Image (tube, rainbow, N blue to C red):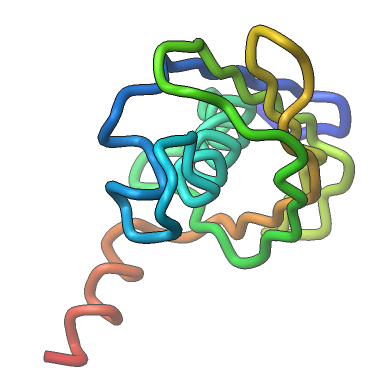
Length: 128
């Protein structure tokens, strides 16, 4: 299956204490941490194209530009959406957004690159 503009993915989670800025070290408050929102957005991007990955293929994040627009307290559900906006060879660009039960909490763009899982791991672990 070919990756095409318009493909969409969505993931959601419940905000727990371990997802807060105070717990992950990105701030001092008990609100949904930006790094956790970013991970959720990346997960939505992966979900959008997972059915297109060949055997021993995956994608890795290579670029992210986001705005965290609104704080979310522990106990609310958060959802991230991603949509493919461009495909340039092995580079896929996504529009990403995140929402809590009150509305949009984040938005931006994300790029992922298709790689061979084994080759990628071999290169990374050759640093040891």
